[in-house]
Image (tube, rainbow, N blue to C red; front, side):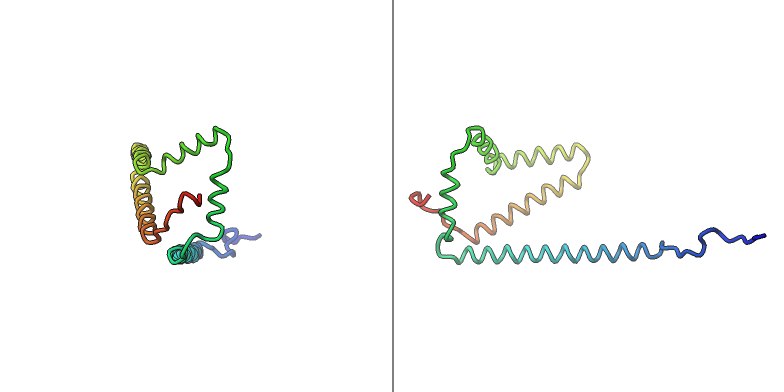
Length: 145
């Protein structure tokens, strides 16, 4: 006897129009959080640089910690691993490894990712150089360490 032609669940409200708004709102919130965290990190980095530059000598625990770390007796294989990893801290091997990584990424066809890897490393090294030149922490004398 029920001859209505209405669709099932027609009384439910569609959320298709709200989905875009909700997604945009969440995106805005996360973007704000990311920007706030980035700014807090930048302020922390600048504050640490200024404090370190203006400090007259080594920090109270700095020399003791350096001596403790340098006098630890490691297993022979640990020293080999540390030397191998430390090799990549030198500019020439770092440039070679970065070139190999970028070439591999380019061969996979990920051009944008390769550009961002090179850009990220370049900007990071540039900031490290600028901060290092600003802070200019003197190396401790050989008698201290």
